Length: 55
Image 1: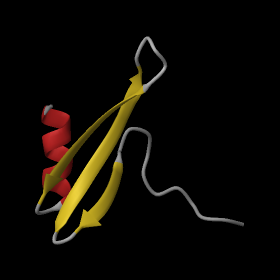
Image 2 (image 1 turned 135 degrees about the vertical axis):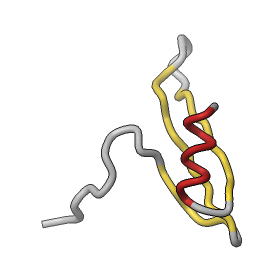
Image 3 (image 1 turned 180 degrees about the vertical axis):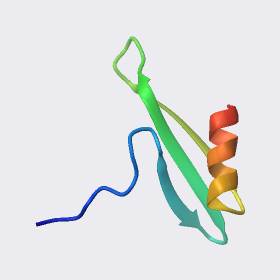
Image 4 (image 1 turned 120 degrees about the vertical axis):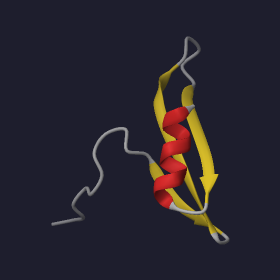
């Protein structure tokens, strides 16, 4: 049937860059229609997510 969605809305995207984890979240669109994205890099997934949420 296809893949089941694991993360909910605004949980972000996680991917590994070398030995670090990068978290990227989309928060909507600005007045020009461009996506508002924030990203952070950390040693662990949870630390990267915490950095993005702090921003």
